[in-house]
Amino acid sequence: MSLLESAKKAAAFRAVDECVKDNDVVGVGSGSTVVYAVERLAERVQKEKLRLVCIPTSFQARQLIVDNDLSLGDLSRYPQLDVAIDGADELDSNFVAIKGGGGCLTQEKIVASCAKHFVIIADHTKDSQVLGEQYKKGIPIEVIPFAYVPVINKIKARYGGEIQLRMAKMKAGPVVTDNGNFIIDWHFPADKFDWKDVNTNINLIPGVVDTGLFVGMAHRAFFGYADGSVKEKICPA
Ligand code: 5RP
Image (tube, rainbow, N blue to C red):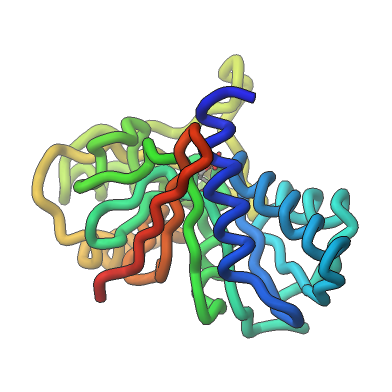
């Protein structure tokens, strides 16, 4: 296993051990770090006979839940979650996260918003002072296909920076989300932004479904290191 994978696994295992208990309804995020969280959930269900219901944030998460024989739920039956565990592309010192590297940001945000505790798991490279310090791929924004050009123009006119429509591998066409939409990635300029304001304003543009800015959502974060150690951070507010 590579050093980065060991770091992800350490964070995921520790978060599942500390944050999940018997009878919990658990939100399952998306991405490569969450794979280890699901592995640990399945181990604990086997060994400790935990009774859990898992709510997926994406098609990938749903498959992980099913493949690991965990009990699958949905928000109609379980609109209130005890905990949601998810990866992040970056988390700054104010606990503002960029998410959506895998394009699942909207469902991830919905599930996180329904959880009493939202827990981020990541390798240590995602731990930043300011957004953009480590993560260079910009802020993902899910848009309705019909509106992607005007949305790009409006964000650029207001905030500057560069924005690309996310393309599939080999430029086979735009990436399409689980909701049938496009993703644009905003490479924001190196200004001092009020991310809460930015998130609100971008969400007001017609055609925007949601942004990958998670402001005031995460309660705890676990950052793993290759040697198996984990740094835990608790939201300052
Ligand atoms: C998917 C996400 C992921 O959680 C985020 O991209 C982190 O992924 P990984 O654990 O693979 O680094 O937001 O939309």
